[in-house]
Length: 469
Ligand code: NAD
Image 1 (cartoon, rainbow, N blue to C red):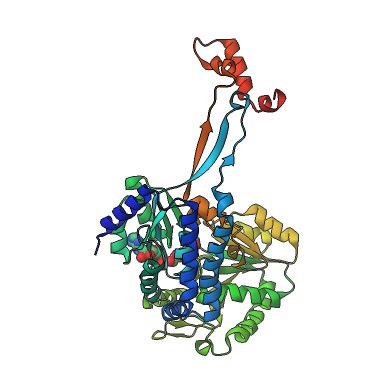
Image 2 (image 1 turned 90 degrees about the horizontal axis):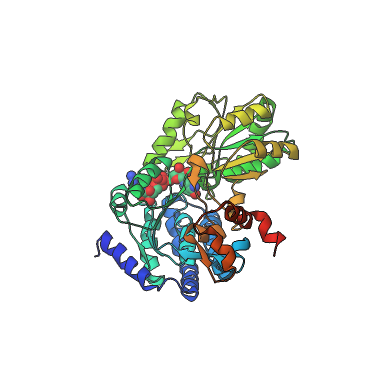
């Protein structure tokens, strides 16, 4: 078996040969990636069920179809993405050919997490292939069944010279990171992101970081509480709350809380029955370690459980749980929950809610439920977050026409659709000069004179391009 550095060398020679660059090659690989998923849908669903008890319905929406749609979208748009983008000129460069050329970065590394183990590895891979790169992909060892399946399937479908899977945990990933890559695309926790950045700094490798954080959900001036409860419960408890864009906590007035709690209870019972542990539509916590972490958070919280709270260690089950009377300094408010626990905090006013959000790190997603569009606009205009969605949760990230990514500590860079192609492309600024307007261009040469400088300043100004030509 090749060592990690041999693997990277092999991909580097393939990239240097130019094999991954032609549009037709990219199209073929993207088509094969789609076939890989379509041909093996049953195996994929089984692996996801083994790892997270992921319901088939959720797995098809969030792992299978989302990747197929992304690849399809890339194939449909590839020609236009690859076209040079023409740039405007000024008077001195009027007859030059100025354009931005998207070029592949080279050999890239994609590191994925366990919560959507297929989607979060293969969606970036679509961008990497579309942009003409070679790629090493490193699935999460925590979602072991999906990890093994990806390692088995990728070499059967994609070019082995250009794309390869390296498996392992923290130690193997650290060893892999010793190699020089042309880009690292990391999805996971903020803690590990710091060590990824340290490793990247050795080779000055650029990175995309898709991280997490606590995504707030503010409910204000919302009369249809049942409607809000249904959308909120779906977004929060999809994948048992193990979504980076899951609403982490709710901020609302005491009156809204009093109306929301019974609506949440009714919705949770409708969605997952009175015995969610027996409901096939509710996932499990991925590992014993994460189960323990969540149970400790619950134990340390001073909030009052108004729904759920039951658990089963052997089954890695935690019931959909809602808490009220949660204070800002509560254990549940110190880190991203990343599980089926929803704290509700009360605030005196919308302004206080906005201030609460702005006291914290910028979240990956921010949600507001309100029937009053001025409330939605007020939250939108006075906060910052990676993405924003009103009157729903998660749905904004399903569109390939919207960039997906964080801001500040919730992530650097973005992807999905065109932005995935951009994340893995270098925008090369190109100017193909001719010999026109030589007298004008000669003004820059010494001996320097004030009148030459005045002319030059004018030719380079915005005014010059439209006023003379
Ligand atoms: P993680 O950081 O523990 O692991 C992610 C990847 O990093 C895995 O492949 C793992 O093998 C590797 N890894 C773990 N320790 C490492 C180390 N010391 N050095 C190098 N590599 C290491 O993250 P996770 O627990 O798999 O995922 C949960 C986190 O990811 C949450 O914070 C969540 O919000 C975030 N997340 C973000 C997005 C997004 O798109 N922004 C999506 C999913 C998850």
